[in-house]
View 1 (spheres, helix red, strand yellow):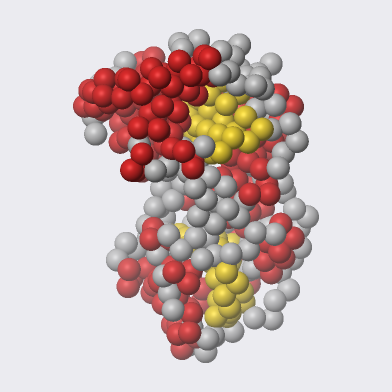
View 2 (cartoon, one colour):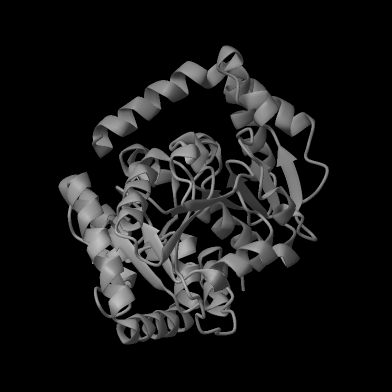
Length: 392
């Protein structure tokens, strides 16, 4: 979608929903928000995932400022629910009102209601963490409101370009994604001030103590959702080929992969299901030798950062931002094939390489940990977002 077309579409939408918006703003000015908040964080839901964890990290960085988190989508699994119990942070769940296609006019009403509440706050900041409703609200807030968007994946770009005049700062979690947006702007012949609103901020994590791998059987893990782009069926195919070769390798699946593969067909694999406990996850990261990913596209998954921090090796398809952090034969192995059968064969070859060359494995794991320590510093992360939010 081009910038011009997106802007026209947005203008027509604003005309169509005006009566409901106006009613919402009227109610917002009569029935004011009872608590005062200068920062409004728009998040989709409390499900497990890498981008939700970044949203949680941001909330923790600014919890002393008492932000309010607005959830606009119903939980699918809600496995990160407890992580949002942050002292000083208020939660407002509106999905039961606005996430209903049969009563969509209520969604329009809430856009007016919330924009009125935001406009009433002094030095208000509105942040959207990959949340559709954030884009729906920001065209209706005042010009003095500071708006910040965070994006992890290119799938959002054709849609979000229509709102760039309503966003003061656009943050990207990978340098590659920022470059993609710059190319999008060039294609749309946008002037220099738009480029000045683009920022890149690394995600953050706590670096664990190092523990050398001590497995007698090589442990390979997939950790993630059973989403289509993850192509978990390819990892199952890799596991089957390795098993048929009789190699001392065990495949482990963490996540809701039961949706996409029949576990009964792979009795030689371990299936853990969704794991949400911090201590359980730490045990898994410590136990893993390799993280294997065959995704069709990715941002920079938190799980990749975690495995790097634990000093383990990543084998992944060379998609999107992955090659920015995983350098072939230096701190991991990149699958360059795009055909699914070739991806399986290439991955099998890399696994055999690591089994036969433990020195290379340890060298790459050490390099990964050093990169993680240098790049994923939590203090730098919080400082960068406070600057973006204009917090002194």
